[in-house]
Length: 314
Image (cartoon, rainbow, N blue to C red; front, side, top):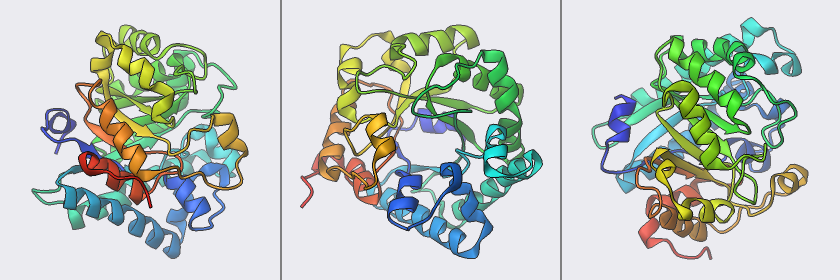
């Protein structure tokens, strides 16, 4: 299956939820640098990842949705090699191992009624909640190309750049993916005012990236923000909304600064989150992928999958 089929499918596809927050708060893992890729190094870790993904695959199957299966590589870029205490070569090998791992899961579960795309995740070179450094597009290209190329060699169907804080880094990522002709999705994170952490309005960021790359991204996503933080932005409308193809929202209404300091998980109301996502679909005509981010799990994605029947959590 190719991303073309996802974009033109009559039904939307699901993704998983907040993998890292689930592993930390529900499974008790200590993830260095918030990297879920470290679980690939142990048998127990691989079992927990498999169980996690399979629960979401069951939801997709039961609700008649397709599924975007993420390799756990969000924090497996070369800029994280030093903080993780690993050589760059080892980090890049981790990306290839992660793709093989989720590809095997796909082989066991994919069927005509459950189409699955393998998605390579990449994240920002710095803090995903606050841009400690604004990268130029050229610097971003040099930083992210090794990981993007490794994911491409491993055979991903697509790449998603998640929790991006500024447009320049996104431009470099898109250009790196174009070098190997792999479709890429750009997902910006938004603050409580609906703007990127850099302060740029979402519409302007999408326009900047499209102008610099010739509409290079397959589509854009919004992730790591509660629907209340950006509903007004998408409701206002504009031609740019046709470029938004995915939403992975947070369960919590807290700001990024508050989430960064939280010692307990705010998992919000799964039923409410399902209904809020359903409302957003009215303003985003080309929505293809819907799932969760921080604080969400199978309960939230289950409500999103059957959004027309969601009820408040008990």
